[in-house]
Image (tube, rainbow, N blue to C red; front, side, top):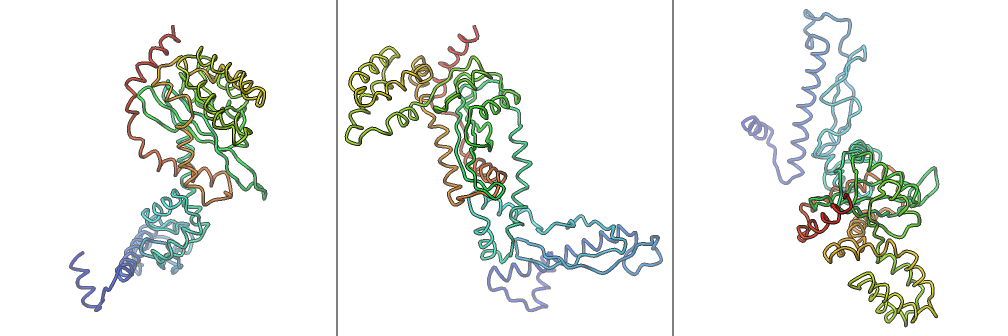
Length: 401
């Protein structure tokens, strides 16, 4: 091959000045190879080679060529596709509706899509960098190949037991039947008994509701999750009941940070600092009894101006106070939903260029690809997992007994 290339370059006095010239040569070579392969396929199909009429044993015959443009990593390439009169020839090297020739280029497009680039950005990028004209619909068809993989990922079997599962939702605007609607993406992240973190599922649905969460939890059950020690959630109404319906023994920890935000959002700017200092004594107390005492003190001092704060904490206390029964290392892990909120922030970085998604599928494609990119860094377990695991095992064994 090297000798052939040397001869070709010398005989045709080809001058290579830059990468563009290399691409042009590679494109020409590829077209010759592919057209030769297609002609061989038709020979095989018909049972005789061109002009070899003595061995012809079929009523079918060649019928010229049709033109096709292929997108390749070396630029757009014109190709002569052989035809037969009967229209029975189905080429395999370049299939009938195939318009890209290299997996490499598709991977580039999918990678750019995963980084949050819009189809317009990808289109201009491919044109400028590779000299390839590629339409929005072609980009969509390439990225649509992800959808069966996403479905398979959503239905994959899971571990029987998870130490902690974080449940949360983020929201996006999606076009639906000509109207723009707000859709929730429900996300579950689990920490297995080996301390490894994994995204258990992402699901697009209507605005966040306990009913939809119930269907997701049933889905986790059907995929093999028999038990969850602790579920960490925000303050969505009906969420604890949905969890208890599927996993009745699971401890529920409502996010302290969400509770603080929800109950202090109408506090005067001048008073927020002293009020937060008093509230901090509640959720950082060493024991639940001490926390209840601090809440009583808070109530006496602030109920005159903000009676709803202490009332909300008391109403949600059963799920807010779960972490007090665990040692410090476990408390740090479960008292907030920071684990899943950090993941959500990384998703938003990728999707920030898309104000409105054209469909639920386009949203799910981008989130799945972004998730795969993010979780590449999740290679091990927490440094303090040995301590956490031994502490959680004690509580898990007590619950089973």
